[in-house]
Image 1 (cartoon, rainbow, N blue to C red):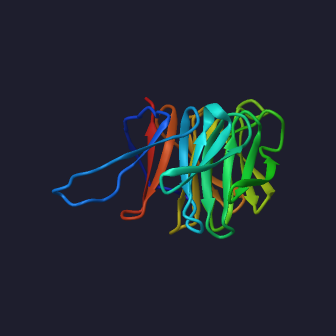
Image 2 (image 1 turned 120 degrees about the horizontal axis):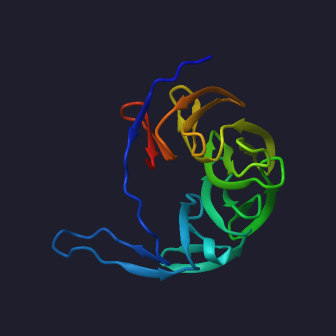
Image 3 (image 1 turned 120 degrees about the vertical axis):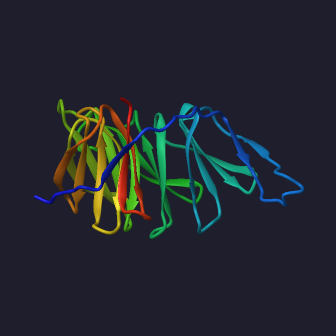
Length: 229
């Protein structure tokens, strides 16, 4: 058993998201800031940037689509699964991954089209809510698992699920520590953080009530966990 001690608890403020994307170009202090508003689908929840093509991908949860922005123009809308909530770019293969919470799946986008849709969680009833790219692999946090009190983290290599890792109840966010290679998963249902190394959970850490967002700070090597209570 590996002992993990770099966990620090903080409290943050959550913000609501509207259906307008604003761009803010950098200007001089005299000129001030100028913004451009871009209309996308309903209830945008997340964004990702593709460094290969320069596109910004916006998840429109209420429209079950992804809006693709080039500069300040929407150049495409891509239908995905029901209630997409998270998105991540994989720089190793140039693909975009979208978690479809109510479709038990992840849509995989190349450019402006879906090239694959993969089922995650291993069983009917899992709901993917968070994504993390680590060394070309996509880690998917699935809540509401088919088994009471159990969550699943699926691992996607390219367009295939290569394993499903059992964690504590309702995993909702993931973070990666490149120093030790650990992946930290906030278990909202059990007030814990699961620590993954490779394809196994090596530790479970008790934190505050209702842990949600979790991030790694490269400057001090600490992992921060947002707890609702």
